[in-house]
Each structure stands twice: as structure tokens, then as C-alpha cells.
Image (tube, rainbow, N blue to C red; front, side, top):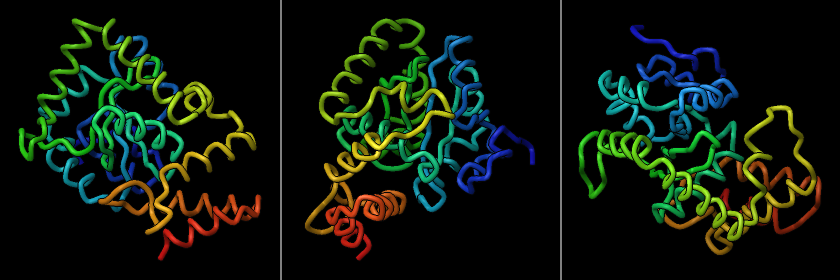
Length: 244
């Protein structure tokens, strides 16, 4: 292989899929966050899963392109996340992108400040402008230029977005989810996760969110585990409805 990045040491099939991209991918880790702060670079978090069609498409079109990868490596700290491994992060940043763009899905590409606060994002970006979507290269250049010239505005926008998410979704502050890898999930956290899942649940047809829907196996698994420990019938009913 011509390229090998840090994802080669991961166990996730999705992350290993990107281990030979020319993009200098990091897994979610303190090293990446510290590097962004040290070098004053915005963070790109790209979230997907191994069976995601458009994740594969964007990889082939953009993440395997050496010119595009070189620009990403120069101007951003790039993090890949498997949504099956980190549904907590996927949930937070999916809410952020839905608030920014009005829709969500995978691949989920979101740009963060060095304090891990989202300020811009979207789903699939084509390599050139198409389908009424900005190109990935234009997006990268726009974000890099804005960071260099209007960083204060970006940080203010990120603060406003976080305030909005906290008020509308009742999520815990970001720092409780994204800092220490050794932090414990409390029973209150589990109840809040369930409440947030049910806010997005389609109680008539099953699944989560609006069409087109994507399979959310981890969410269904969580509902089943939540029912096992709490015996809350609503959790089991939604899980079974989403399987059918």
C-alpha cells in the first residue's frame, strides 16, 4: 500500500477501511485533540459505518484523492469515527449537522473548533459541485479561509449552536462525553439517552427520523438493553417496531 495512517491499529472494519487513505486520519483520541490545539487547526470529524454506500463513494472520490488529502492534512486535523463504536458522538454531531443543514445522514462530516464545538457540517459532498451540493474541495477551502480570517466569528457561531442544542435536546455538556476516555456513564445519562432516542423515534412506522431512513442497529440494541435493565415497555415496543 502506498499510504498507511493511524487507523491501521484500530479494530473497527470501518476505520480499517480508511487505513490506507492518503488522508492522515486519527481515531477519536486525545492526541488528535491536542494536536489541533497546538497547531491551531480546525478539526474535521467524519463519521460513517462499514455498510454505508455513500461513505464508500466519498472515500473513493475524495479521501483517496492525493491532492485533496494533502490539503486536508495541511489545514485540518482529521478524525474518523465509526458510528457503531461511538453512538454518543454520532448523536451529538448528527444533531449539530441537522441544525446547520436541515438534514442528516452518513457520511456525517462536521467541522469543530479546537474545543470540539461544531460550527459547520453536512453529509455527502461530491468532488465537484453537483446535485445542488457544494464540492468537497470548495468546502475545505472555504472553511480553511474562514478559520484563518474570521476565527472569532466561527467560535461565536459554535457557542450559539451548542447553546441551541443544549436547550432543544437536553443533552449533557459536550465535555462530559468527549474528554476522558475513562469517564463513567451514569444511570441519569442512560435515561437521557433513552429520552433523546424517543424524541427522534417514528412511533407509527418504526425507525428513527424522517425518510429516507438508515438502519440504526446500535440504537435498537440500546433500546433492548435499556428494556432489560429498566423493564420500560416503551423501549421494547420501539425496538421491535424498528426491526419489523
